[in-house]
Length: 437
Image (cartoon, rainbow, N blue to C red; front, side, top):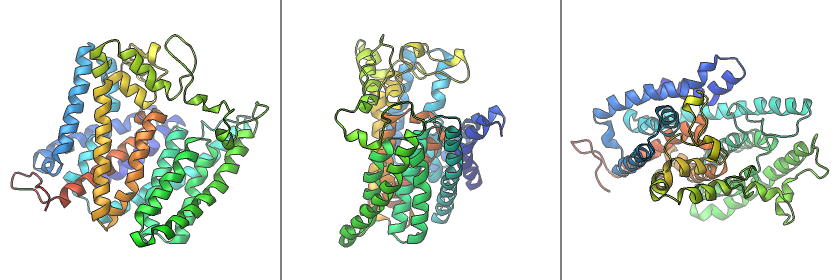
């Protein structure tokens, strides 16, 4: 199974990109879904032999309620098979990987190999991103939206690299990574975020990185480690802000191009990206807040739809063709941050259950971070800001459609959840985990 996981990690981070530049055939973009089917079959067969007993009951309950919410939404709206299958693709394809760590019981040596592979993938993002950035400059484009490395979206690239930086910071504080090595890797991972102009980096990197420094340190050393973290953030700012402002001003058609400092100007109009007043019937680009407000306004007219949504895939556009595109895509398709999509397609119940699952993972990561002093415990410390970033990403972009983040998030979340269940006690004769020891 470990070799399949190596292939999965490489596939979800490169297959779609290599397909888009014609180095792989177009069908390669469906490789992640094919692997999901393969892993799901393995999970069902191996889990039925006792592996499922290693998964905490709270997750079974949360997944069961989520499944009921999705089913009720599809039935209540008489969902057509095409959009239903397209929506199901995004909602369930990552979930089998949550169960893999419990069933396969990888050791920490294997975890270290997985982490090193992901770090290598992150380092490859630098030359790819640099090529994409300078290609845009050469053609007179000033937007960094097309600087996404191999992850197909600039926002996904930034969130992915920030999560890896959080875990890497924990490893450095716990002395699993040397300081010179950490500094070099820190700069290498920061550069792609600096040239792709994702504004969220400026706001989420400092607190996430500082939290990683503080939580990874011993109680008596936290003040000193926090000072080191602030120094690292100063270095990051000295790299990020000038590069961001330079590339944003390059070939800009505006008389006063946007700078990152403009976010602190109350007269600036850049904050319109959060809320534009893009209600139904008003043809303007939807802001992030609009993607939350409009679904609640529209669904509140019908209690059933407010509870269960319009059905999986109901507002989504599918690359498989019109037969798989949701019937409400033309009306609500522009409100597609992940949170907006979840509200429209799964209602309050489905969206609440996604929040519950994130909350359970965060609590397990907190418990493992406190109790485990090994590599898994270090991963758990770095996973605390990662879970928060994943939740924020649902508000920021349509994160759920990008397999590079989702597959790895659920796999390592399952690793932490299994470790938490194991700490609570060994399984009994029936395979169920006992209570706290």
